Image (cartoon, rainbow, N blue to C red):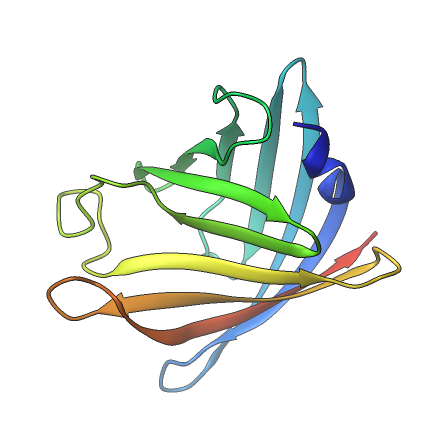
Length: 147
């Protein structure tokens, strides 16, 4: 879990969801250690952005870690999370049914690039379309700034 050290702290996130009209979003995200786990708590605005908590950990050291996600809508999802160099990745866990009752109806992943100074993350959520969910397009950008 040492590889996640660059993420530990409090972050302010900003993005824009491409609706008609576009919806600007803002989040405050805290990434903290809890023993051998990492906890990510997020509070967002406007009200349509769900508050969430994720618990990361449980896999052997150095492997992608399970990320159990829960939000204020009652949604729960299982992702995997890894930090490879300066690239932060979150993706749907193998076997997760993204068309099921808690699924969004498309595959999902997040890719963020951490700046060399550790103060910003330029990121984006992507959606995977098609029957296999492997035709990727940007869902919305989400950039983080260390507080």
